[in-house]
Image (cartoon, protein in one colour):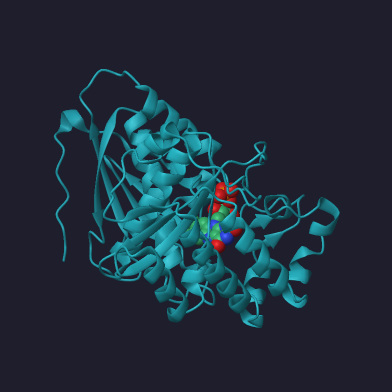
Length: 340
Ligand SMILES: Cc1cc2nc3c(=O)[nH]c(=O)nc-3n(C[C@H](O)[C@H](O)[C@H](O)COP(=O)(O)O)c2cc1C
């Protein structure tokens, strides 16, 4: 159904230029599946519309668009947190002009927060986390989260969607399902072919995709990484790595919803990114683990049975302590490349 945007008064108007400079660069830093950055932004006075960039849809690994919408949700959360930092409120509408292929998916409407600029510690920490956040694929140390870490992780969350699993026996089960899911997806030649198109060497000048350094591949080897992904039987090794990645975590945040619509996928993405920013602000490392969700319905229902939250599991994020703290940022498209 079409939703009407709140109309700002002239006095409250925030120019498209201000929004473009203050908010969109933060949205662009969001994580996305295979670093496809499947978004385009359009700023008008007081609003940003977020569109799908269809040329970046992973048709093999993400036929339902779930991961694409989750990625747009991540960008939405970055935009909302940047707005808070710049003393603005942000109202979110989903599919404000209907759900046609080229209509905006998310509309953010900003207004001055009408409070003196007084960045409290949380807002500043979360804003800093937008830049500091990276996907950490190293093995974590399994240590239990401290009370302080748990408090920070739980800030500004919708607990109808986000659930934390730290029980060891449940983590082991999620690890086993993720092992099977990785084994299954990486056994599919068409999945590997698509993945290989987004794997880059460590000296890449391209503005998207995953460079070898982000995946722990030594620089010289990264030159042949796309070919290795395509032709080598990587499923056995990658499946056991995924298992260890999950078992070495202190917790897995699971994002699940009562229904399974695009809006649910976006909302799950918003929560995923909020947990990830909170984790970063708490000095914790994190990495999404979606193999068990995208490998097929049977894997997804196994996760649901372990987690015992809402019926539709949309994404998972493993969280923990890592000794690898000096991770390099992955590339991003420029502001101009992301504007519509
Ligand atoms: C929806 C979504 C799914 C992802 N799935 C995985 C995954 O299964 N395994 C993984 O190692 N990284 C995964 N990632 C992390 C992306 O590869 C990563 O965000 C991207 O390469 C950009 O790197 P950065 O997060 O360090 O900025 C996922 C990210 C998103 C948003």
